[in-house]
Length: 256
Image (cartoon, rainbow, N blue to C red; front, side, top):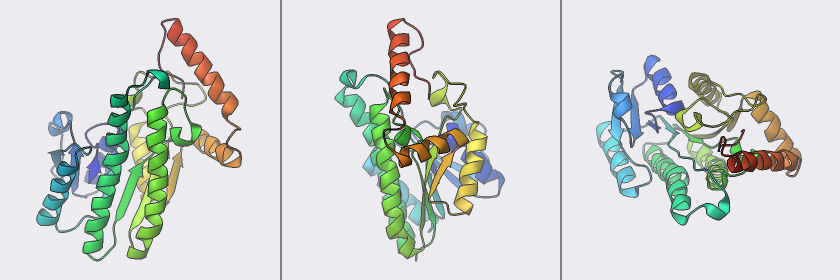
């Protein structure tokens, strides 16, 4: 099953899995764009992962109709933008509910189902390189993605005793609808969704706990681990330029 599988990285994952002969459930609150070209092996369900009742109903259906679940990839997510002083509580709650609570609800439901069926299976969650780059003007997004990274790592330690693999993905810029209006830096180019999907499935095959790509994201990751303040000059410069563009009426979104 792929949540958020109707577009972006999720759609690319669904396409690769279906082409490889895997039966895939797409759980997305907007499935209209998927239905026209859905493969025979793909079943699309209109699900909002931020609503616990819908997640419960989804897994009850999976248990009844299929009896087991081999792989869950949580791609459902949203991203707001703006200064923290201007971010409303509704905006905060929206990102927390979709990105974090939705990911947790699906992961825990999948974990429970896999345990009941005797163990085995894989759960993969989508964090972001923003979780360690700590991109300015994306505070709710950074917060939820950092929490997903920690949640996945902790769950993975408990799950391994059941033979269940948990991985977490921290991609840099990917050419998704979410990124379409963002200004890109020459030094942090975006990769295609198909390239991202290929890297993720390769990482799952190798049981990689944390998947960070492309190369510049790995460099930022290593620098942040070496010293949490090493990237602060870059963060401050990114914020300064973004605010200058905003005051000048130019591009609102920061370089990633």
